[in-house]
Length: 172
Ligand code: NI
Image 1 (cartoon, rainbow, N blue to C red):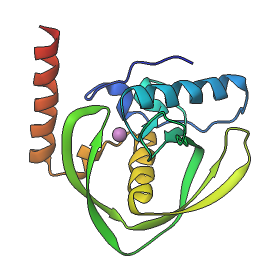
Image 2 (cartoon, rainbow, N blue to C red; image 1 turned 90 degrees about the vertical axis):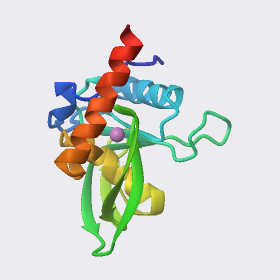
Image 3 (cartoon, protein in one colour; image 1 turned 180 degrees about the vertical axis):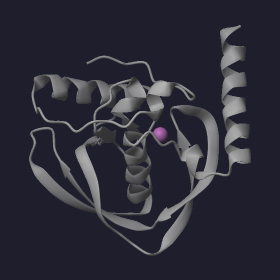
Image 4 (tube, rainbow, N blue to C red; image 1 turned 135 degrees about the vertical axis):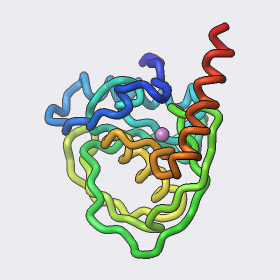
């Protein structure tokens, strides 16, 4: 396993639409293992392949957020929302590609997601609470959408300016 570099906004690779996973082989499983390790190292609860520059419809998540024995990384390939609730809830979100910034985003409270596991087997999962928020956030990455794209332009630009400033300060 290896820790990969996480791309930071406004990297153009974060805006690309990811393509379907067609081959469920050892290369894919190695990519997923790298994504899990990268997510844990960054102390995130979810990571999408485009965030490490790989334009594939692949997501890893672990809401337990640590690498201890109870770590339970979930892997979702080619996820699709097959149902979502009319009820929407606001939740404060952050993103490893928008480091240090948080904002409230409103999304459907529940959803059902169809996906394939790392062996290509199809599953469906009913999501609510943090799981629903996280999976919708990660699926946005597969469409080139960041959580800041759900905000007003004013708020989005303010956040992206802060990210750019923090980056410049870190580099100097
Ligand atoms: Ni994100």
